[in-house]
Length: 321
Image (cartoon, rainbow, N blue to C red; front, side, top):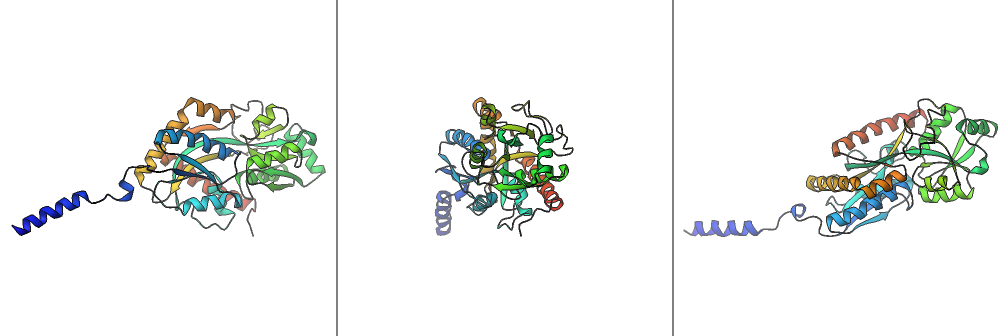
């Protein structure tokens, strides 16, 4: 009889024992969204659009934290080493796939972070200040061959997609260009507009308003086909730089080990956000094409681009000493 009573008490205690932390209701507090580049650039703009919608959908504040430096490595590492509890989300570009082939990084891009969903893709655009006096890629090539070493701005650092694609262009065209890297597209665009640097290789988002205002000339874009937001800007291939095609993408990640149910909820809610007409219109207006889709599809893209950037870094001899 005593044994029966003991077992009954034990069963009752087990029934009221606290659930594991990851099984409790999520989210119960604000969620940090790390952006590894400065405010004003393509990554930051997309993150804030999505974060605002997520805040409404999840009933908790989703706040953006800009952790800049080392071509995004500081913010990426901070996310990779955060608790895998669903309260840290990383919004990052394809620097995640390219940086490990250029820098000594303190994270494993394919193991320490779990892809959640692709947010968007956009062209990298070659922009010129009007004072440079060129209107086409051909005119730029002629100018640089006569005056080698023209400086160009990027909104991300050495070894980024913006850097690699410009060095790829220079290699095909047989010219020499010198990179000036900034912590984000917003800072780079300010110097480009002011004419402190005459050429820029940047994501389309910060460039479009200034292009439409007549403050910049856009010479080429990296996508296979012209962006719907930039229908009068030729692709690099149309401009005679054959074989140069590269998309710059943005995606959401969580630290590896984050409960799958939380990652799936984030995928679903971000997917819904990307389907919202206001968010789609804002992204399209900045030449970012909303994507969404499954986590598996995004994971395949990350792996494929990881291999592509390994090849480019080797072929272009891009490596930090």
